[in-house]
Image 1: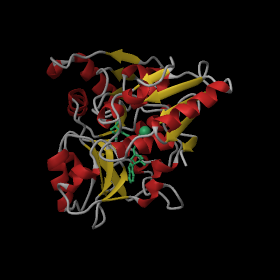
Image 2 (image 1 turned 120 degrees about the horizontal axis):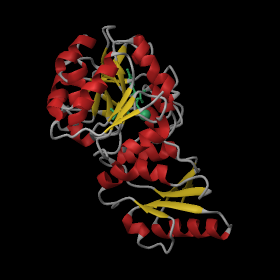
Image 3 (image 1 turned 135 degrees about the vertical axis):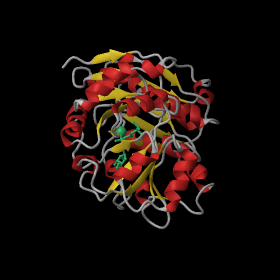
Image 4 (image 1 turned 180 degrees about the vertical axis):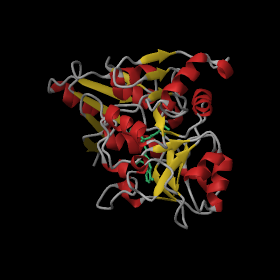
Length: 344
Ligand code: TXA
Ligand code: MG
């Protein structure tokens, strides 16, 4: 398949021919990648099983992992769900368009493979002009997981989508680098106390300003609890070379790095500017300040894609605090890591 690349202008979005072309392909049950404020998504008509099946095939995604449905307005939420609790309306009002996915009771209108057989459906309204224009033009809700091959880091630039999916999808709408960098927060509002199934762009602290109580799914800590969000059990975000996550102070990090170098390992480092500034070492990707984890979130996935297997044997990565968006950053790093090194 020939994958089309479009570079639409966001200034003339109302009559942008590439958006109409992409929308037509979506109505013809093809899959198209598009930017959102979090990461690039791989979209297909969420009401059509054949279209949605193409997403699973292009990504190599396990069939039991449900997809998030993207909508242009609250009316589309009501067409796909039933018994929407008042708290869900409050959250939509406060955070949409934005990086919050709500898990609601499905009324069966979404294609079966979107919900992977669950009685619920995850829905969000993305905060990106191209995504919203595409949703409006296509006239259908769009199922869209992150537009990476299953297991790989999520794409934050159109070139990442191209690396993973060229030849496997109908087209890619290029909207430049995404803003948030990590995916949406997945929040289950079907129980009396809302549960965060996946930490993301909207923080627990943000949600607490709107609802009296919100908790993290205990399964996020690992251990034996089964995650309620099926996607959380799979290997994710894996860079080409094994990632080791380091918990400890800067001295401990430097010790671990030196030991590996002495053993002759070709090491790559992912670190904050505070730590990177202390290393006399050339294979370091600096991804922002550890005081502002929003910066780290923006650069995280491109950092995970940067080191190639041919250049490094192991990637050492600094760990960060897990307040605010740090919860999402650390959740992704813990999933990406094959090993952790902990200071005693
Ligand atoms: O920011 C995002 O959310 C991006 C952009 C493209 O919108 N999308 C994204 O989709 O991250 P994906 O498929 O990579 O992750 C969806 C997550 C998975 O962990 C999945 O298991 C969970 O949402 N999920 C979807 N529907 C669910 C449901 N009904 N119940 C529980 N978890 C669900
Ligand atoms: Mg994903």
